[in-house]
Amino acid sequence: MSDDPKSLLLDAILPHVVFEGWSDAAFDAAVAESGLTVQAARAACPRRAVDLAVAYHKCGDARMATTWQTSPPSGLRYSEKVARLVWLRLADADKEVVRRGTALFALPHLAAQGAALIWGTADAIWTALGDTSDDLNWYSKRAILAGVYGSVVLFWLGDESVEGAATRDFIDRRIAEVMQFEKFKAQVVANPIFKPLAGVVSRFASAFKPPRRGLPDDLPGHWSPK
Image (cartoon, rainbow, N blue to C red):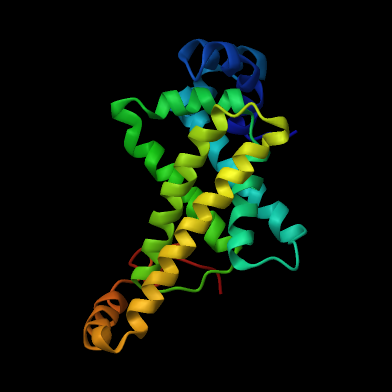
């Protein structure tokens, strides 16, 4: 078990989330069971249960990536790999805990946080697949997949089929729709009629760059060991 305060609180709160949601009552119960002082718990999680809900989601992304890197499947088409990762992300989650999280991040003041988490999941999936796009495609891929993932989560929450068979079929259908759109884009670009326009769009797209991961090492006040 980790000695990190947030990890201790996350382990302690999950059984309570099922009944209390990501609430102050669940957070207080987690503090009492974790052995941490109230001050240490509040220092680790200033927003209390909200910070733990965020941590739960990000832990799910990390586990998905680790599982994929440890034993990546072979012989799958690219679209099948995307679908497999989406299902892998859901299969590892507790449905009732996710249901409570969905309700939490549907609140107006937390909606932006919820959208950012779904974007983070889409980013984690593309990163696991080795995405190398460095222009507007970096953003469009994640935006499209975030929309797919959000709809899949809502479907999954209501799915009562055996071993999530209906959800897996739904994922396949949604990914197929995305791939059809990508095929359409490729056909438009290849069409001689749109070739001049495609060049303009390409130059426009190349101006967009994905955010840098980690801090640059040339900023004032930055220090790194030699």
